[in-house]
Length: 164
Image (cartoon, rainbow, N blue to C red; front, side, top):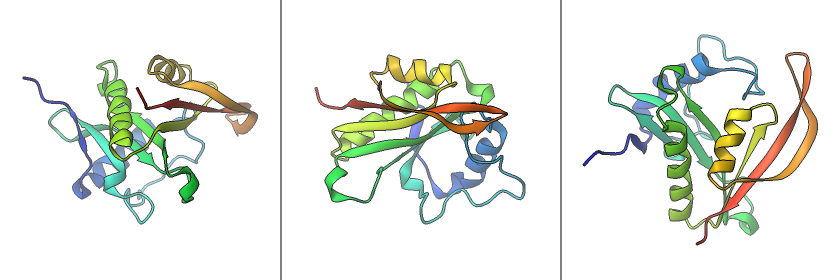
């Protein structure tokens, strides 16, 4: 029986995850400026290990997904939001992004959520195709919300239900 490469993040993963963010940074998916060495601590009060699932092929994390609450309001505590999905360039094409996405939906369901949402840049076609293939639908678009590499880029809101 093959074990899943997806596991909960551990505090000791922090340096590897910070390097992963640094090496995969691109305006295809990031709106924040490129991180600069020395890299900030990956985990902090707002980004705790328990908010992350990692893809680990045996030598440490090669990908992660962050799952959080979209707000602190009780009235939408039934929703979880994917707040980051990254796979190392060297580990792409192995289905890890899909496995991370499915694991995040399973974890959201385990936490009692009935919906999962996310935001993706309009020009990130591979990510949008992945999300659509996993049941996410476009629920809103903020046209030209970001200015990246000299172009205006849409902010696309996507979501899916977890019931049934």
